[in-house]
Length: 386
Ligand code: GLT
Ligand code: MN
Ligand code: MN
Ligand code: MN
Image (cartoon, rainbow, N blue to C red):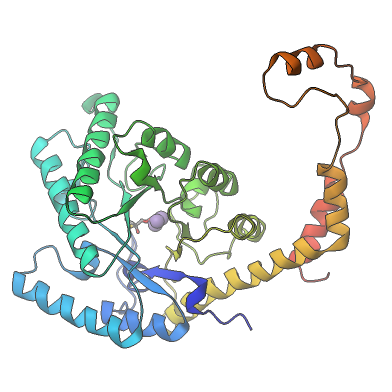
């Protein structure tokens, strides 16, 4: 039970299980899984795919011969295991050249290089059949707002994404781009800090149909926001192209905890949202094992992410089939309005009907809504006593 299968569409980044446990204060504590090792380990655990930044696979200073060797070794591992590469992305944050951003840098030399590097990462992703291209602008931000005009930065961001959409079209790549927001870290403030802000930017692009979002649990929670609500808005907009699952305590540094390890209730409602609305994209874990772990701990971490998702998926089913909960929901959500002609859409009839509407304000205001009972039942499902 709760054994992951390919159909579950679980994926991991090479950087997640490859993470050696380095942090800003401490040295690596373990050998991270190399790309080929990661492919074998994840395939054995039942994952569907693996995703990478250009430089997770091919070092930034690799010679063409090294690149070819790495690519063919990686390809062999994928062929041997049947693991897929559904998503690729680009590192525009690791190298010192990006210390003041890539697409939004004040320096046009850096901006041009950032776009060129992204095109090369798109080429690399396509060699492995990637269909989604994630853009996380980790360095697109500032500490000193005097130095960078934020309106200009927004324009440059747009210009770069427009260029990359045209590149994808010109190469017949068919990529869907997924923009990933984060409020801060590594910059003091990152532009377009939330999924909602990214959705706003998308509507101003030349090819909005090619671009959606890649919301991450931890990032929205760092901003103090309700992740479930952010994802719901993206789903409603038809823009949930990808999702980064992990966990995070609110108001802390970027923790990348195992999915569901901190906020179980929020994780439950997230899984419920994805399952109830039949999200068909990848379920990508963007997290890493704790720094206390060795390689066996990394395997436990990888298994735990997937198992928790599957357990929560079963809890969702239980919630949706629970008679008492469904009766309560019927009572809460099934209220009727007796006002012929009014349908919440503006029209002459609707307007006329609404103008004649009479409500017993005091009575309705005094009705209890029964959320306490509903929430307690939810908790009892999560705690396994129903
Ligand atoms: C980095 C970041 C993640 C992004 C990755 C994609 S890289 O690990 O913390 O949230 O999704 O660039
Ligand atoms: Mn992420
Ligand atoms: Mn993150
Ligand atoms: Mn992170």
